[in-house]
Amino acid sequence: MPTLRSSPASPFGRKVKLVAYRLGLMDRIEVVNADTADPSDSLRGQNPLGKIPALILDDGQVLYDSRVIVDYLDHLAGGGGVIPADPALRFPALTMQALADGVMDAALLQVYEKRWRDEGLRSERWASHQADKVARGLAAFEASDLSGPIHIGHIALACALGYLDLRFGGDWRQTHPALVRWLDVFAAANPAFDKTRPPV
Image 1 (cartoon, helix red, strand yellow):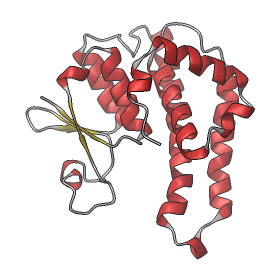
Image 2 (image 1 turned 45 degrees about the vertical axis):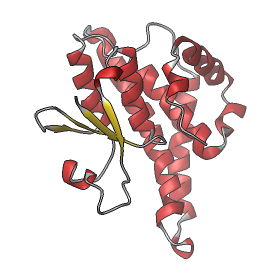
Image 3 (image 1 turned 60 degrees about the vertical axis):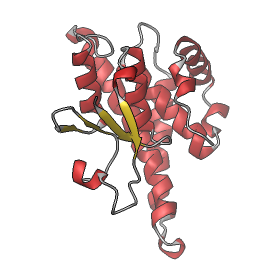
């Protein structure tokens, strides 16, 4: 059985879990938590970058990062489940995923600035630079047409918004009413969104 190294709070790990649930593969994957800050965690031997998520296959091969794992799971399920096969739909979905992933990256970097850097060395300019990326990404999504069949772009966006709820108190909700409505509809249609919700 493949093993997914992740952590409950990881938005990228959550993306992989949501895809696995949507494709009916979650019961074929064992989830093992990883501590990216612990040098003794076996994760660093599985992914030299020491990052999550990482998927360890039965033959010992390790896949990372989340985009590669999602592509693999979609292939395993027969293709076209969350990554459209039609190029006219595929590349917009992948681009949407890239924007949502970028929002998650920028949010994580803000968290890491406080978690990893001593207080006197923290850069407000750097944190603001990352916050601006999040703001621009959310503005683009707020103005987008998010209708249509669920694909990887939608799943990544839901995970990005969930992470902003977790780490930033859901401040985005005050200024992005269309995204609030969209996420409510997404969560109702995808029970795994609640199943994968990280503990507060």
